[in-house]
Structures are given as C-alpha cells and as structure tokens.
Amino acid sequence: LVLTSLVESSTQYTDMRLAAAPLAGRSRRQLHTLLVANRGEIAVRILRAAAELDVRTVAVYEPADEASLHVALAGQALAVPSYLDTHRIVSAAAEAGCDMLHPGYGFLSESAGLADACDEAGISFVGPTASTIRKLGDKVAARQLAQQLGVPTAAGSAAPCDSPAGVRAAMAGAGIHYPVMLKAVGGGGGRGMRPVARDEALDEAFAACQRECAAVGLLGGVFVEELLPAARHIEVQLLGDGAEVVHLYERDCSVQRRRQKQVETSPARNLPSSLRERLFSDALAIGSAVGYRSAGTVEFLVAAGPASAPAPRYVFLEANPRIQVEHTVSEEATGVDLVRATLQIAAGETLRGLGLAQESIRVVAPAIQARVAMTAPGGRLASFAEPGGAGVRCDGALYAGYSPPSQYDPLLVKIIARGAAGGHEGAEVPASSWEVVRRRLLRACSELHLGGTLQTNLADLRAILASGTFARGGEWTTELLDDEEATASALGTPSASSAPSAPSAAIDPARASRRP
Image 1 (spheres, helix red, strand yellow):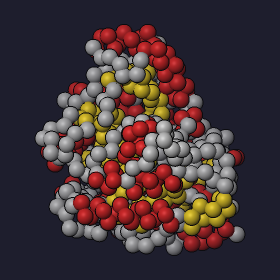
Image 2 (tube, helix red, strand yellow):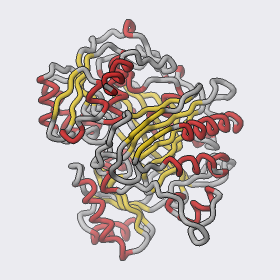
Image 3 (cartoon, one colour):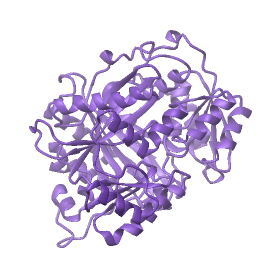
Image 4 (cartoon, one colour):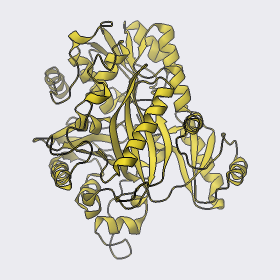
C-alpha cells in the first residue's frame, strides 16, 4: 500500500525550478521507451525525468533489490541476475521494446562494452560514446590526454604498473617520493585509490586497489602519482551534444572521508576568479577534444592557500564520463535539469536547441548538498519524513518499512539547499548569501526523520555544517576528516585524546565497490 501510494503521487511530480526546453522545441526523434540500468536514488531521479517527458519506463532489478522504490515507480520492471550483466540488461531492453538506455552512475555507467552493445542492438545509450568512455574512463589515457592539451597534471607514472616493483620503478623515473597516491586505471568514485605514506605499505595498497576494481569488473591496472597534500577537490560540470560542450560552473567536493564525498557546494567558495576561468578552460578543452556528448565531469585538485593567492597550483585529477551523484547541487545552482537534458541529447537534440548555449548558463543561486548514508549494514526504516520549506530538495529512494540491502552503496538520501536567486555577480556569491544556504541545509538535516534501526552519518553531517571551518568556506581539504586531530579542531570539538570520538561516517571500501 505504501508503494502504491508513492507511485500514485509520483505521477504528479513536477519540479518547475529546473529549466529545460519544452518538447515542442525538439527537432530530432520522439522518445518512446527508456530502460534504466541502475537502482536507488539515481534510478528514481531518471524515472521522474522520463515521466515529465512522457516516456515509457522500464526498470531492472536484482532479486535482492525487488523492494527498491525504483521497481515500483517504473512502468515495467524486469529481474536480471546482476546490475553488471551487460548481455542480460541489453537483452531486457530489446525485449521490452526500449529505444533508449540510461546507465545512471556506477555499475556499468563507464562501460564502453555496454555502449557498444546498445549501438549493436539499435538502442540509444544515454551517455558519451564508447570511444569517449575508453579515452576518459581509462585514468591513464585521460591523464595523457590532459598532458597533450597542456592541462597541469601531478607527477607520476606514464603507464600502468603491473606490480609493486613496477610502482617503485615508476616513482624513481618520475622523481617522486612518499607520500604518493595509487590509483586503479578503471577506478573512480573513490574506488581503487590508496594513499601510501611509506614503502612498507605499498604492497598491500597495490593489492587493495586491484581488488576493489576486480569486484565490479573494472580495469585493474595501477598507476602512481604524487600526493598533493591539503588540497581542495574542485570539479567542473560539463554537458555536450557531440559537437559543442558547455560548462555548468564548478562544485567544491572537498568534504570527504576516505575519498568518499560527504558535502558539496556549487559554486566553490573563495576560489580566485582567475583560477576558476582556467579550470573552465581546461575542462572544456578536454571535453571538446573527445567530442563529448551527455553529462560528464572533469575533476581537479587545487592546492590549499589564501583566497587572495593569485595562482594556486592545481592539477588534473580525473574525468568522469557519466552523470555523477552530486549533479543535483549543480542543477540547483544553475537551474538546469541535467538528467532531462541527457535524455533529450540522446534523442538527437542540440545544446542550442535546448536553450543551453554557454552564454545562457549562469549561477542563479548558491547551493549546498549533504549525502546521508548508512554507516553500518542492516537495519529497517520504520518511519520516514523528509524536510521541507523554501529552497530544500531531497533526492532518495526511501519509504517507511524499507530495509536497504547491505550489498549496495550506502547512500540513502541527498538533501540540497538553495539560496535566493540574484544578489551576486557570476559565481562570486557574498558570504551572507552562503550563510543563508548553510543554515537552511543545517535546518533541513535536523528535520530529516529516519525512524528505525538504520545507523547513519546524519549527526556527523550536522556537525560539519555547524562548524566554523565550513561556515567560513574554502578552508576544507580532502584529508581533513581522515585526520583525527584536524577533524576535532575543524568541528570545534575535543580531540579523541580528551573525549570519546564522534560516530564515524566512514564507508567501508568493500561495500562502496558496488557504488551506483
């Protein structure tokens, strides 16, 4: 009965805040039936966008995931052995008469094999071409492309290493020393990455990178880069139609725990305007070089320093040829419905046909997003109530009575707060406007009701948002939450040496290996 009620209410779902061209403006082909090859909140997000376009939808689910909300919201749902079974998923799409397939994020979203299989079956893949996925999904190939385009990269190996001994040789050849970062060629989303501070830890870190990627069928070769300490994680949102690429400004994703993002802001606070323009230029150069189509992201590390610094050092981190978890904060900041746009572009529409030329895209309001996630497997959601009010958005796949399967990504719901439109120039948002958004998100996180036995990071998120370090903006770095003393200082709480530690929001990498 709960699911039936949710399905009925979903048919009335409309979010008028997010702009997109009306269907009458499209000049290519009509959308008919879409298969969503994912689960959880991103599957629900895609299903809602398709419903607004009057597109018939088909969901797939693993047996353990039959109670997931996306199964109830789709027009049709088909069981598959695995979300990683390319052949069965494409066969299901063909059997259901689908002419489009959206992979979401994670799982097979960066699979060139899936894009190829869709092409062979005459199904439009809602994402970049298989060629682009191969160029950007392979982290070494993407790094080489960045170097060819003159985009700054961290010192590191020029090719994958097949053993810890190969890593040591590559380090010697590149002239880098510990600490370093090991990365799997096919990693991403925090998977297949290990910081290594000393040589004794290298062998195990190398094996761990390979294990994480092997668990989800990704490329497992490992390469090494210098570790840029005390850095900010800044990424640029791209959208392309295969001929033209635009940016939708940037996000600051520096609030992380063990390389898993916790809180994101758009645009980034206290980022020098000259640096912002360089990041845009470099990201667009990479997107244009591959003829990027659909939504994607180019990520950078920016050396921490005073906001007044004229040219902080920055380096290319990676490119993600897919929609990302945090696309929602960019949607709220720019007013552009990215998921809807990917569907329309896959149907042959152009950016300009959608009214999305670069000159028309601007920051309409500052936005902050918090990711509420499970911190331990198991549990049941006995009761559930989302926060509300002006400028608050929740994206999730929860309902009262739901028991989230523990084998999937622990993300439960994203809460996004948006400020008032106007009152700023470009991406330069005054501190007073940011304070409104921060307080709004903190209030929303306090209102979120998750009754039952689920263990979550909600208390940690509230502590982060309430801290002076976060309120000042631009001071948070990617390693802060992984340093106990630094965390205690940033959150304004006693260190573990003088008081019990706060509940940990760490995500076990083994569980995150199935991150959608």
